[in-house]
Length: 152
Image 1 (cartoon, rainbow, N blue to C red):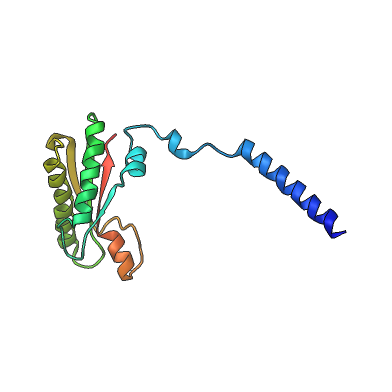
Image 2 (image 1 turned 90 degrees about the vertical axis):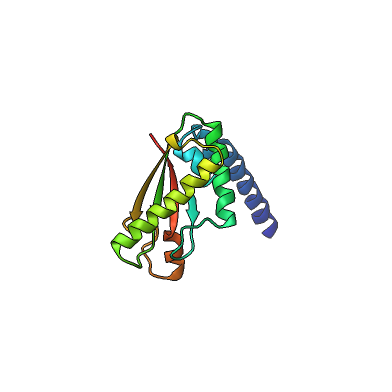
């Protein structure tokens, strides 16, 4: 009796696996249009994170910005906006200024790596557009960032 159940189960699993292999969706990465925000985010990473009350790029952040520059060199017609963000601590005016310094730090590094300043716009949102609405240190760290957005 147990053998019949086992063989029946194996047959069912085999049929399910065979059916799945025919109907599984195509990998989404294959459907991403080159030179788009989705392409940039999937192949490079669009966020650079900063330390508390700081706008200097860490060595890891600088490497990431260099990768962004390499992608931008491959897509020479693409313009970008670098958004600067801050966590919820501090005044609105202070965080707007800090977000702008962060966005400019990324812009300056991109220019250093060979991207024309004419292709880069910067904007600061300060604490207006948090990525995480929590109040833990982890939430704050996620909000201390710049985001590079492909224009258009």
